[in-house]
Image (cartoon, rainbow, N blue to C red; front, side, top):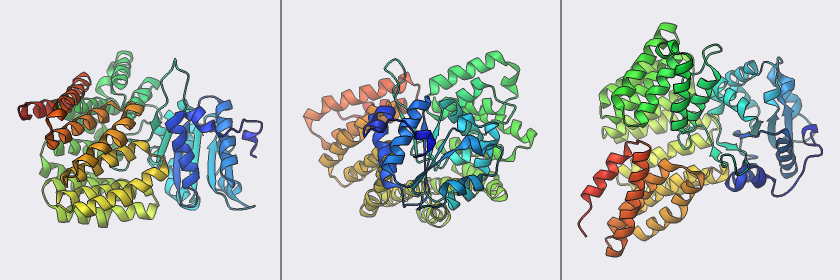
Amino acid sequence: MPSAAKGAEVSSETPERILGEDGGRAYRNFIEWTPGGGFALAILEITEPRRRDELLAWTVNEAPGTRVVEMDRASGKPLRPVLDEACGPPGEPSVLVMTRLEEAAERHLLFARLNVQRDELARAYALPWVIMIHPAAALELTMRAPDLVHFAGLWLREQVEATGPMARELSISVHGGSQAHSLPALGADDGSELLKKAKRAFMLGRLDEAADLLAQVDLRDPEGRFTDGVRFVLRGRLAWLRGEPEQALAQLDAARKVFEERGDERSRAVVMGQLADILQARGELDEALRIRREEELPVYERLGDVRERAVAMSKVADILEARGELDEALHSLREETLPVYERLGDVRARAFMMGKVADILQARGELDEALHIRREEELPVYERLGDVRSRAITMGKVAGILQARGELDEALRIRREEELPVYERLGDVRSLLVGRANLALGLVQRGRAEDRPEALQLLALALADARRLSLPEAAQIESILRDLPPS
């Protein structure tokens, strides 16, 4: 057993005890199902070395052939020889576990090298990777290696005592990591710890926390409020999520100017993509499409970033779908986007893009084929990765197809039993309120008088949450309530 795990406890309940019930099950599934299927990445945030070593010991015991690399030994060295030594004979490696990244000297350089060599390393060591890392270092990993963490199909945080936050399953923009552009990276000298925390809170969906931290940053550095591109981006994205599109556009345009002045081509492209997101949502499809094709895609092509190009192409497909150009949208996904993720071996991203294909097929009325993709191409991947939230979202899409086919009882069962309970366990308020509204609409569609009180209660709960969080869904739910047929 690797030295890091010597003397550590090996118990069959270790994953659940350390990561919580849902997180433990997800990690157990990752270790059981992913070996032999190529590259996959799980990131586990563990605070105490003792708990890290217990989880490491369980992993080594559960997956024969697990190789452990203490990454503090890799600081200042070429990565390939270190990983070659870990994955060499005897026997075939099954899982690669990286630990002690937080203890590496000049770890910011180590993280940057992991980021730059992401594609090369994923091809060379095409097996499941597990990164066990302290939460503070995980924040830095997010900032310094955004392309690497983009690969993460599973991101979990340890279960802490009842006095602290409950464990959550985390991944980079869950069920959206493959279609959402990252925020511009913080440079070596342009980010306080508070700003890094604000960026991380935003990435994890903790909008109130991000806004509070951002306000603290502005108080400590008022001058930077007008010169810091990352702060402009965060304020813009927060404004957009809170239903303030004009403010969002103004902040993002200010960020664009900052990055242009710096000559930061990549960050400018990211911001242009976010501007296109807002224009697309406002129905300004021609301008959004122009930005994608003229301001965003050429940058990623020049930089040779095939993954971000694929992300942008998927957004192009979204716009084409919105314009009713469904055949061209399907062609973009099938010919320009899916092959990239297939070449990279990114099964999670491929599953997400197959879901987009299913969306278009559903819009064309090809419900049987859309349902087949949901059940055969998406769900098995999320189940194998232990991605409970993405599974729940996909089950909601299945319910939507069944609802369109008139199979209302099964659609309602799925929403009640397989979708909403997951959001409740994960504390995902936004997905929960949307799910409640969809369940209410299904009850209304069924047309039974006895369903009306439940539908009204669900809509009232959803509306209260949407208003509390200042989300644009509040207006949609209010419209649904106004349009309900009289009792």
